[in-house]
Image (cartoon, rainbow, N blue to C red; front, side, top):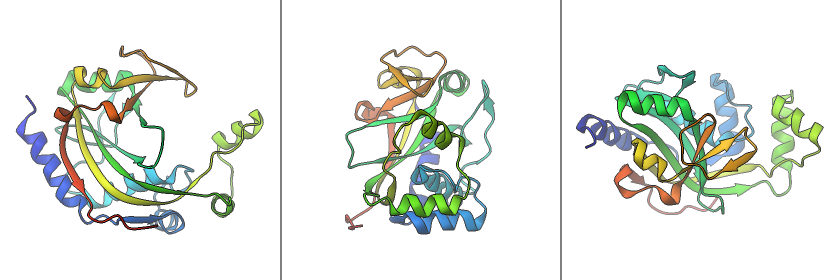
Length: 227
């Protein structure tokens, strides 16, 4: 059975999350991260990193942002168990989230019994005109290794996200059995396999398959505000 201390921590985090901003404008969020010196402000998938930024700001004093290393894997935070911060679009056909290294997660579960994910869900607005991409690329000045490899392979750039409306935050706690029931494996960041066995690679979780028993707290932000 889930320890009361883990449930109490999730409840404290849920209450603290109520003060997070509901509308995340891409330009404003990236500049906010840059101006405060948050090192991930250049990342193309800025929404997930902005959520990490908000978690570090709003969860300070409740959860430790420095985590022990498990099989060369460092998680976003620790309190009773390791936690990762993730963000997911609600208006999408892809319900998979990439979590962390499978060996690190397995080691964390073996050590503490559980692995936690704090998942922000909301509506996303996309950069259909490419103006946001041009703005962000100019602001970043340099081109990251991922972008260089993409250009060399002749692969078109994915449409970037320009805004996010926060609708829900889920506080999820997995043991080995519940995680295997809703996960697959991402191999070499390219191919996917349906294997549920814990082995080297990154675990992907289908959020539609997460059992109710793993959802230990949820914050719903009232009203759906247009972008």
